[in-house]
Length: 397
Image (tube, rainbow, N blue to C red; front, top):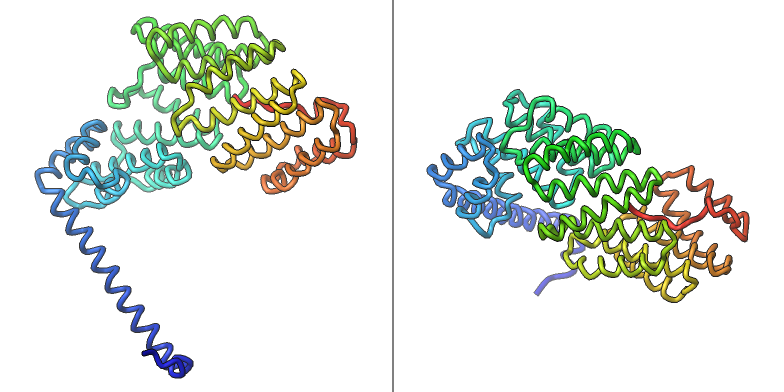
């Protein structure tokens, strides 16, 4: 039985804490030793030799295959982390393991963690073989694009193009030109984007690459839509859809339906836009589709608002908001509040619109977006919100 009177004494309490701390520390040490022992037993010298060769030659497929053979239960991320400090591997192999660790974080939607690894290697590593340079430049380009830092992403992509892509990257010149064009689209440099989509298309046609051709046509469609050339955009998007369907290219089919639904909205064909968007929703069944599904529900809500079907508009906007909250993207949540306000505005219910506009205020303050805050205050001051430029439905993509 515990003597509670003794526990109140400071010296006894300190002794108890110290005793339990050492016991806990001892258990942690035992656990670390166990993990290291397990790793050492699983990764024999023979396996290290096989991994050495795969890492130095940047044979990613073989790397993953070897890791699964060694221990199918171990997370790739954890294993690559351990490999990056295993001194039985050469410095070059350890460095490549660390780059692939960064790639793993990137694929887990953790771009900030990936960037920390990539920047550390870029700034501190003395070994810069061509394979390491190219793989590192690709990681930096992908990560910066994910973080919406498109100029930086473009810089590192151009390093790969200038030095000719290695076969180990599994990227053709057409793939790289498509990526470059995509970045110009993000930078709103649409003529530059169209120029590089044309270069990409030429390469993909030469190699009879259906997926690449579909991606190029989709890129044309996006650029022309942003330039306000809706008919040209629709022409290329239908071509992209047809090629994607023939090639059973699932991602291309989703992109095409999304784009066609947005085009129908721009053409004020709201019923058709809803139909195309709902076709897309039926395809968005993977966890990775959640962001696209949220944007598509948002688009359906906007269309219903313009058809004066408020209940349906609010239902789909709230479905979109729920998905965005699950994703945790603050900016997207703010756009949903804005669009719910728009639905009320279209239905001539300004008081309800203002209630939802006010929900965006703390989000804009958190994002430190002073421009949008100024617009918000101006909109709220004008109770009837007559200027549609101050508040309008927000489309993604």
